[in-house]
Image 1 (cartoon, one colour):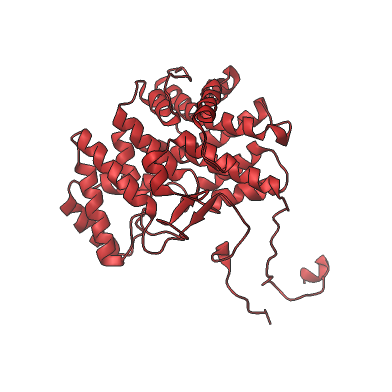
Image 2 (cartoon, rainbow, N blue to C red):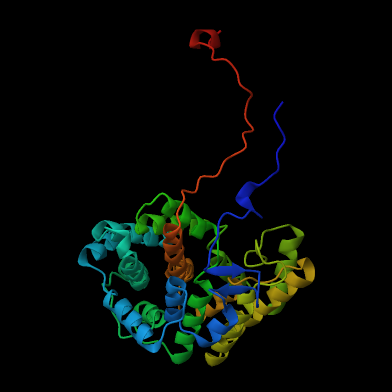
Length: 376
């Protein structure tokens, strides 16, 4: 008789460790980084301030922020060898595979020799991930070798400059900055936990982040904003969206961008990115996708009491920034690497290898039988 056990698949509801970096659904608007409410950070801070906060536990002074941004700028340029590797990745590759392979290559070309150097490598990944994505995209799709440095003052502005090959407008840079802040950290989500599991073995920082990227690639973790874009782009009007969604619900189709594994009544990040989506739609005199998104949000709440999560309005915002849909999830990587590397540092600072037990549900003990007996 197999012993019955409590179903703890996915570790839902289980506490798997401690962190001083983030609370999810516990205080304030529902999300804090090192004690600061996400609404305050998104409204007043820069992404660079948030990255510094996650790595040090405190917001930077002006001198500290200036030096931090200088260090990020110093690391922006990709090496010729890394560019050569990216050029060999075909156009049809999944961009998340590009990010994963680019991160792994960084760890080969300039490996972390000592944990004392972890801050340097964390900054290097923050600085170079935008260029990895954009260099591969331009070369594979258009045969163009772009410069991997820019004069942009922010990481978000740098990414948009490389991608669109022009300086972003003030509103475009502001939307990108807010997005990076919202995605920077989210406690023990699947990719972060994967990074911490890897870090607990005392592996190098690039291996841990590569594992996190591979985990984020899964459609149940990253990619919801891409699915949301496909959904809203399939409708010509809000009325058509309502009719279409009701039909999808009637046939029990899964609709991405709604609900959350932790939040129960709302995602605090949604209201923030929704307002930025509204602002950039207004600035560009193009409210079509926003209006369709808003009708979808209304229908899902009315019919299923499911709220839009952080990914849903990112779709329309990113589209108006000129970002191809296939690059939506790599932006997640560019932001979340701040949180991943902060968690890796935290894990290393008070480490014990993460090795949970498992409740066995297989066959009862049985004797070995020889091959001749098994053959009858």
